[in-house]
Image (cartoon, rainbow over all chains, first blue to last red; front, side):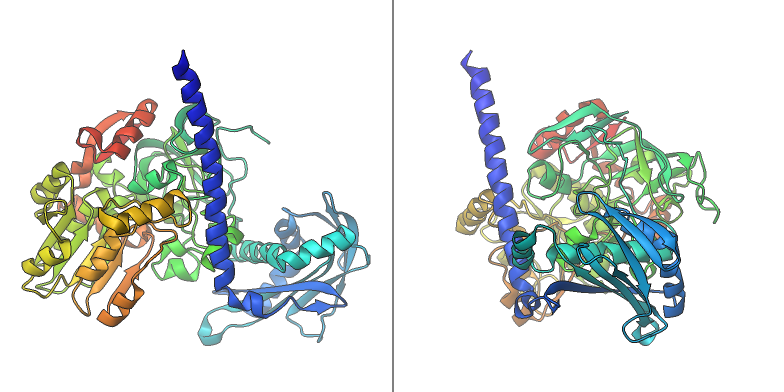
Length: 210
Length: 392
């Protein structure tokens, strides 16, 4: 009779120890990765009007800057790239309505770009309370014929007032940086392969959320 | 369908899950004929690799028959329904710079979660079947069916003269070992030492001889595995539990010079002895490092000055890594996850000519329903198990 309870006890202990081990791993590896990324510590996030910005780039082989810009301007491209974060509806060629679960709705208008460069696309929020204030992409030729470079620039204002600001400062550009990274990789995959890598809807032995 | 899934540390189970579906136009659905356990799967079973979720389907080494194709598949006349194919473990788009340069496990377009790897590795790499959400979270192939993206690039037809069991290991063990030998840039007269006589190690040994190594020396502790190295590969062997020092033994076997290249086919769960091993065990248990680096450290010491270290073992975070030894000996270090797509045509040609027959790796054949038992045997190396092979 004691054996089943002992087995359960060991299973609970193993589960609890497993959690501790996972926490320890992420603390060790995450801390190491953060410590090694010295640039993250040296440079505090740039601020425009007190709001955090993040910028990421990706090189896309086999495409000119002009071709990439044309592809980015297609409504379907922005819709598919931002689909994990928000539903986008084009009100016109130059105005887009965003709906993000838990973050609300806002409208963005297309701007000519900070320097009027032809190979850039810039959207600015019309709503000063919107979490995403600016999304801009610029394209330029890469060096030595290695394709073209797409640079994504985000200005993100976290919700939650002072608490949200404090959390954002604690994590720096980690979360918006992740959004920028994934968005650029999705764009590259769309351009180079015609599809977005996904595991959505695949089988697993857990509750099907479809 | 039935599938072998991960439910936590040391808790694999065979369960019923939904069948996969075509999602993207370059997908195929493969009816899995055979799949096998890999040593790196044990790192998942043992909980050393993070970002697995309960319910994930395991398995990244497989072959089968194309059951269904996406709208864009076959337009380049490569893959059709009914084709018997083998698929490399890493998913490769064939279009990005890395795929075009033969580095398919570094593909820029197949990881749906690049931000996870970017945080840990600096840059994302390719997706892989059944091997954590950091590597994309793709459903694995210990199942009756599996979805294969970019099929025209990643499905390789198996010629009639190559059996299912021969083709199976061209998915992972053979290309990994072959790549490891390729990294050594073998010249006539070279001596290559290989740590590990599991599937990958034996394939690395065989590949090194195929590539012209004069001698291959295999290092392990299990007599049945060392016998495979001698009998099926033609390697010389060292049982590391029977010598005082592997480094000294290799020096003696090479006239004091040391092997020209050393291949580590052991990885993060190396067995060892002594204080360093005890230190690694404690730190690994506490998750302040993930790796027991006994084999790798030994290889670094053993390789000759100016030689090549070829690392095939899967690693995470290692404490006490002797970078100074590497630097002062002027070593060349080459390592990667396997670039199977770059090697597959050569491997199929070798297999077709009978020059590379990996089927001797199969020590246990069983139904997928016995997958838990198979992994238990594989993990504990029971009954001489080198590779269990599962048929759904």
